[in-house]
Length: 143
Image 1 (tube, rainbow, N blue to C red):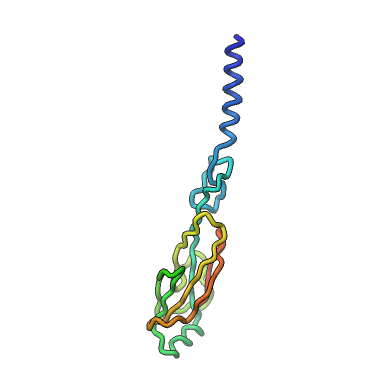
Image 2: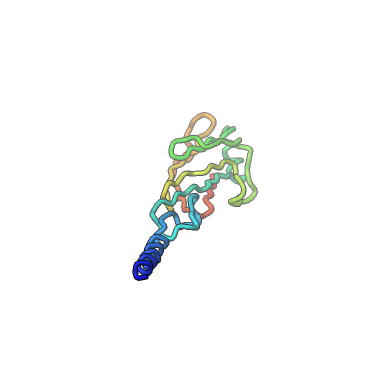
């Protein structure tokens, strides 16, 4: 009887130790969130939408400069383009795509600074700047 009691006690202790220490991603905003994880192990991964848009005033300004198209680069990679005539009458929401949008791989960073460049149809750089993306936030840049 003493052996059965000892085995039972060891089993309870073992289950308690192992069930509490389930590692994984505990951040619900991460793409690999695990409801069963009890302890964050630093494995959380993030992807966030980044939206570029222009208003009517910017559209008219670039058209008056003879520009017909805008090309958007993030960290040196072309993510999309738009006609200079396309504009929004107000800031797009996060569920919309703006003039150009892309999903940015943030790796395991909750905050990531990206560099972006907007070029005209002749390859001339119009804007060259940085933007700090925050996981879980609406990341929108007005061109």
